Length: 224
Image 1: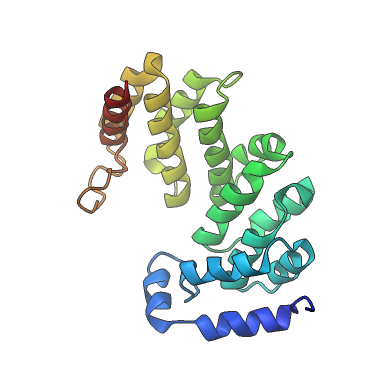
Image 2: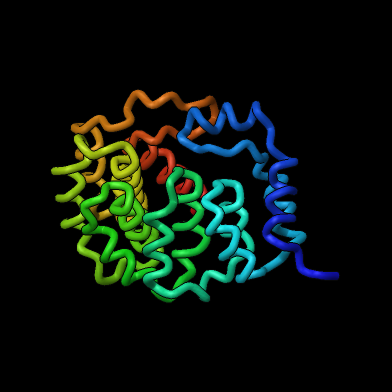
């Protein structure tokens, strides 16, 4: 079997396009209409193909970029290449998958975390906060948790949406994982009221940090 060309893969993705899915996605800032379960099935069939992944990414088509992130080899990207990719990730889903599926597995993740955290572009900074949240949960040694809470307290209320969401996640993670800072995290969440009125479906956890913290701590205690 010959390896599929980028043109063949693009044609397959075009055939999967569903106007109803696109309509739903566009409400969230995404611009593709491919069912993600079907997209993952394509990725499973293609397996890891780094060269094809790079070609798909360069198409600047959101569905192709998402597929690229599923078939790439995360550790094969250079630091500057990942930086360029993040700045070119135009839509929320592409941005989130790039950070979660690729950058978090990269040997350059800590260097990029520090660079992006201080970036003046709030979307880029949100990636730095997302990587920081990962460290809060898994490798907190060396992090200045009180300093993070200071920054959240001062900046989250008026931050742009993507950055605000990432800072709020970090606030919740500090409160969940670090009992010594839980009272302060709850206090900041209560006072700032960020995402307090966010519409949350039944049986889902609210993104409002105090509610999120309380629910996850309750689950931890149930397991003990």
